[in-house]
Image 1 (cartoon, rainbow, N blue to C red):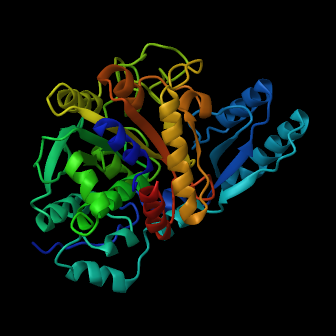
Image 2: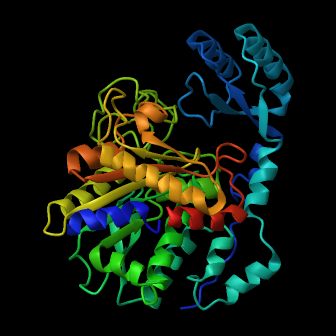
Length: 437
């Protein structure tokens, strides 16, 4: 993010050798659990009745959705096992025909298991290169996805390379007791002096591109500090607190057991056997409102039994509130997600509320600068008006409760060709275009 958004904020405010390997396929329950599963995109059309029937059909077949909140005039992305594909598609096409929906169903993944294997496959040459590297903090890092431990090593290696401008920080604690590890990047005044910029990524475990993208931007900030007056200006004026993986338990589970896992790994509430909270529905902001999260523990958007009953959200909120209430303050917050190619302003909890013109202008600037690199098209606007209603989200909390004036959230690549299983060859371009934004 090189930084259309940040540059305007500047004006406003002034006015050890690792044994690193490529990520294997999930080891405890390999990609075989997804073999012969197709991922299909089904248009929803304008009718709420037809959408309801489609949701009922998906429930009848007990299919897993990638689209967490199906809406009209859009689509749903859904996993369909080969054993039920024929009958499900026959009923789906009949429903679409009956509703007068002419847009065809498309296939995102012919074989999801094979796509997962390909996502993590790297050459022997690359593995040897990484094993021999004195540091993981090199451009080669962005050629593949990596195990959780290596992400921690990457941050540590960045700090080792740039000790005068970076240190490891902890932003909170996971439900299983893991520290939420990040990197603090600072300028000539030292750490903890200038207004904070806070970025969260891998809030949802399966969104692997998000951690790689914010790590790319951290790498750019540090490696360019000494040779770019523009970057030096940003780093000297702000303290960056970049947390690539704020859901470490879920992230590890997505790497070892279930590639499609979204939530944290919190124990089921009483009466349920389903694990996890959606930690982007658990913040104490309009948590009790209906329609923006689920009360069903088995749903992907389960909000928990109470606001902040997830350790991750409670401790992350405490971290940013402490920064805001200190002499340092917080200038910006961004929550990074995938996929859909969208850049959001508040609000998520109320579709009748429009964000300040300044935030919309900054969001537009981000999407324009990003598009100029590769032509990647992003949509922008308030999250509720642009995609769907959300309650208990971190960006609304940051904007309304913490009081961070420049608050945004993003959905990175792509728009549905690969979805969550974005090939590793798209890590670099995603990072480059996001940095340009």
